[in-house]
Each structure stands twice: as structure tokens, then as C-alpha cells.
Image 1 (cartoon, helix red, strand yellow):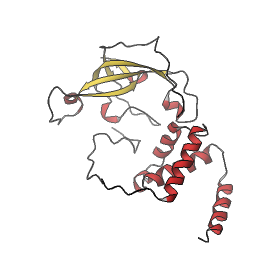
Image 2 (image 1 turned 90 degrees about the horizontal axis):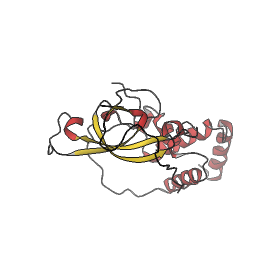
Image 3 (image 1 turned 30 degrees about the vertical axis):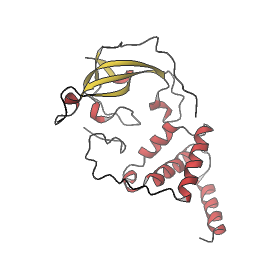
Image 4 (image 1 turned 135 degrees about the horizontal axis):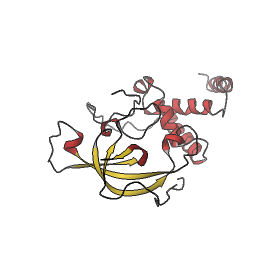
Length: 103
Length: 101
């Protein structure tokens, strides 16, 4: 196993509980934000720390500067139009800061 | 909405799931060993391998898991100049000869 590249997120845009919306953009290249969550609004569940940017690592660069990673919580009924499970269900995804705007 | 990435399939109909354990073929074990050696030695990174697999485009859907990851690894090693296409072909000829294939 390679050592974790984690670093604490001392400088960050969002805190736990902040409402955020995932950017509704579809740039080419290696992207770690699934299409189904783009454009959806949720809330920061936790701050995971800072990590080398995988969208840069994917092309052989060093991933610096590191990016803040958040776990974001969305209501399932907000994500899937035809969601038929209980209305209180959540889905949580880990999303990098540069994919998030304040909502 | 345009889709660029064949691995980005969240929310799409999944179809039936094959739950039979097919085991690993010998070459598949070798492929795993090679990939693990190259990633732990930092010759290639997992992020690069994922990207190289996505870059297979429509081929991504036609190949099974080990074919896909191995072809991605081959393309990545060529891209990074670890070996040239001519060197790879020469080696493949040599191996074919050895196994009388």
C-alpha cells in the first residue's frame, strides 16, 4: 500500500452543515464527480481532509496543490426523480471542493 | 448532458448480475501481479490506470475486466515511454516462440 497523502484542511471554503451545489458541468478528461450528482444540492456532512488532485494525478502530474475533499449528503429524492424508497433516505458522496458552489 | 467516461454509469439500468465465481485464469493472476508491482513501485499510479481505461472509449464496453485493465496498462506504459511499441512487439514475438503459440 502507498502511504496516504492526507493533509488537514486548514484553509477551506465550506464547513459541516453548509449547503452546497455540485457544478453542472461536463468537461472532458478524468473526472471524479459522477454525472448523476452534477447540479444537485446537498449539505456538507464532514471535511475529509486535503488530498492530491486525482484529476491531475490521472495524467502523470503530482496532484499539487492538494484539494479539500468533503463528504456531501444528498436526499435520495433530490437525486433520483423516480426514487421509490423512504423519503428520509440519504446518499453520501465524497466530492472535491473545486466541484462545489454555495447553495 | 454529454458523457465522456464509460466508467461513469451511476443510475443506469444494470441488467442481470453474474454472481458465479469464475475464478482467475493464470494470465489474469500474472496481470494482477504486474499491475500491483508497477503501482507499488510508483511506475504508474492507480489514477493514471483508471484514466487510461476510460480512454479506451467504446472498447471499454467490449473488453472484460482483465483485458481492459491490461490494455490500459499497455497503453500507459507506451505513453510514459517505459518501452516502445517496437520493443513490445519484439518481446511478444519472443514469448510466442517460447510457447510455440
